[in-house]
Amino acid sequence: MKKNVLRLLGAGCLAFMLQSCGDDFLVEQPSEFINSDQIEEFIEVSTSLQEGTVNGLYVTMFTTQTGGTTGHDDFGQRGYDLFADFLTSDVALSVSTYGWYRSSITEYQATQDFTFTDNYQVWRYYYRVVNEANLVIQGIGGNDADPEGVEARAALGQAFAMRAYAYYHLVAYLTRDYNPSEEALPIYTEPGFEGKPKSTVGEVYELMESDLTRAIDLLDGFVRNNKVKINQPIAKGMLAYVIASTRSRWDEVAQLTAEAMAESGTSLMSSNPNDPNGIFGGFNNVSNPSWLWGVDLNTDTNIGLVSWWGQMDYFSYSYAAVGDYKCIDEALWNSMRPDDLRRIQFDGGGYPLQPTLKFYDENRVFFGASQIVQADYVYMRYAELHLLNAEALAKAGQEGPARDQLKILVENRLSSGDASYIDSLSGQDLIDEIYFQTRVELWGEGKTYHAMRRNQKAHTRGQNHLSFVGETIAYDEERMTFEIPLQEIQDNLFINSQNQ
Image (cartoon, rainbow, N blue to C red; front, side):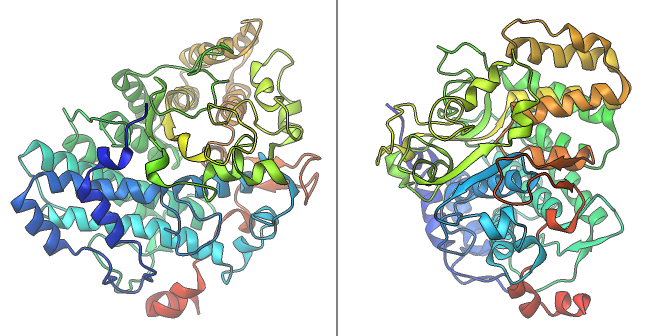
């Protein structure tokens, strides 16, 4: 039986969540938030509140309406992973009965019009995470704090990591490319949103690297009691992603990913069709030994139709069961080798090329009204670090080790087990194959958008999209990034003047 995730996260986190779910805007510190003085006072009384307050960050990641709307696409981190997957075109909206995502995301209207609510959702959700992280950091002593207690160091490290995680997505989703001198978005390192001018992309990256370097140090020796919490290997993986997105320092990326893999105690998922933890097992259980980071969802978390599973799982009470079909891009599927076992993930019934054998509730009851909340969310798994490690090695000129890493994964995914074709790959051909394997292996997991930017790629839409069929869309087009929302432009005088 699954444990109660709210009990695992603690009463402190639940209180924090309830305090932080009002319909606040980002122009000032909302009265609904616990303030930093309260956190500091609570922590002096009970060190368990250090853990409870930082756990509120994790609750935000799967809570509905944290993007400030009542939309059925507003359900935390996995919601924006899906936004990103649609933008890359690797996820195709093949049938749209209820309209979610169609005009705003898959037809790129929101990314070209700042008045669309989707822009506000992205902005509000990630800045909410930033503010909650800042509250925790301030409560433990501020950005320069160096606490001695194990609990305080772990809480502070997790808060720094989550702040960097939020800025990583913000700077990716709101800028076309990595250009250090470009004005990007405001940086807040203290609680509250009094309104600040845009900082440059370079300044955002400097903060992210600083935060994650601090997190890695503070999390040294931290042993977590469940996978919802960030530990040192996850922080190293996050830092690897940040550095990789600058398209430089590939040796550092290779080292960080190697350390994260070695220290995580995780491994690649198998391709055994009978393995519940393998690639055909549904990606539905946080206890999966290849997951580094994820959350245990169940009936007590009260997650229902408005969820990632509600949008993606054919076997749940979901849009995916009744006419909003999200499928793998047909051209991407056709480009897979005939002996690639991952093709089978999209051939399990339902509408053609739906991921019915990749993502599903373990009970596989069609239109099961109570099934959605039983399936967990994954945020990071071993394979993504494995592939990023191979990419970094190849781009650092270490082609032999890169081929070796790539073959480990590909041999496991081919029915023949023969990945000898990789031995002849070098230069851009090797990098392109790693990128292709990243798209296929991590399909639907919110990772391809960032890989697309790192590799400066364009994708051509296959025949099973509802719009722009056959059109090639580059990673740095305006259509691929969100806009600063109307609300922020109206309320932040600095942004208003910079946009004029």
